[in-house]
Image (cartoon, rainbow, N blue to C red):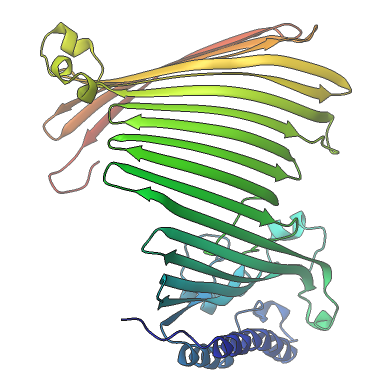
Length: 454
């Protein structure tokens, strides 16, 4: 049964009331601090002073909008310098740590077109300053970095699940605030603000018993100064400032799956363009990828701009499905055939500026790994070789080889294992060196039935 759509005006009023209540609590903190001027260390960090106003605001929003869930965001940052400490402990005995507070809301509604979900969050955070490591690392002793984030989004599953949408946007502002009691009225410094937006559309173009075609497009836009501060649990939207565009086509023909993705990244560090293709049919899995990258010059180092091109291919084979008759044999051939086999190869070239000179390389490698399950136990062998060949006179080449062998034997509740690793690293040219390493590691484990393993 479809519920009534939420009144938009009531939702906005409720959000404004809650936001105002949270900001009002900061003012209450400033007023409370004057009464504790005799003991500056005892002054709680912004965001920890209890207030009845946020609770009243929560109730106002919940009453105005049906099917609404509101959850608090309290001290999800670092508690007293260690992660995982409970919020109650931090609120009672840790007034100098990284703190955060706010709320997140979710409202779900059924419409004639499908299900819609509105979600959002508001949170403010502050970094603790009364710790020696913070004072030594900061260039502004006595100041705390504070941040406020507002996020809102819409998620939909529409047209009989043929169209999925996700739109979310956020705004953040941060500044440095003095923690000294006498400087409570001091102006904020080092102000900055930024925005972040994500738009994702997933459409089901064809849906038949033997054919399914899905198209997915996503766009991420993040400005330079957007940050969530010390608040965890909020959508990060995009890992770094910049933009990303991606388009994916996925086709399923019975047991065969084909997937192709085109994507582009642009950040302050450079840009990247890539193409990925995947094929999957039970026992066989093939992945192909091509990428072109450009890195902008760094003003802090001698490195200039660089460009790279890379092609890679990976193949995974499950012989127990592909060759069941041979893999199930108890003879020599069945024992030598691995249960699973993976091979991969990649190649490319790189050109970079260093100290005003251009250096070019051709690089690549290949790898293989297999797993055997026999009466003698479980064995895994992996091999990887990387190389780099200089295309510039005076520059050196490099070769690296890595081999790992692991064998495990089970006897009742006991498991015994041995790992052997060998690596070799060689370089020629202006810097000549050779390094070889061999290491071994035993393993002994005991596992109880329906119990722990030691």
